[in-house]
Image 1: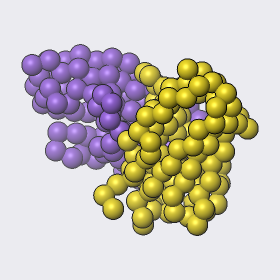
Image 2: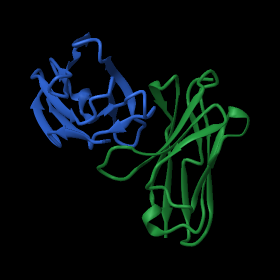
Image 3: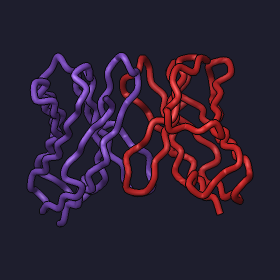
Length: 112
Length: 112
């Protein structure tokens, strides 16, 4: 277990389709975060889990977005009915007690 | 509120010069301030962090200073090298919100 793993690395989808991304955190980390990053901007918070509990969702997150972390291990982020504005890099990070995030390499989503 | 201002947005220096990036935050309850380096196409990586009970922290050529009264913190890189070229993000967290809020980033270019 050498870091945070995200799959797929790239996803191209047609507008209106659903997509799902996966994140495998560092095994001893109890917190898992999802961020979105667009070109030239800093990572923008989407949601986070402590163990299996989803503790916060950004006000920016529409109801087309849903995240799960069954059994407090890996997490999935699903986007339903994708729109062109959803095109971005989706970053997952994990941490122990909130300090020292380790980021994954991200999933780059392109909606055409 | 959740707001971090970062300046400058771009910074060009000659190899061997020093570089300083500044961030200002608004939430007086913020107590953890990390800095991340993101090379093109790669994940953000933690390079240094500071907590609110410390005014300065150094790690070789990198240092971070914190002024809680003025609500700003800065990254200092001395003896810059071309491999320091990247985008640098500051972030802040308060234990009440339990998540990092990122600045907009500074693109640092170190010319040989």
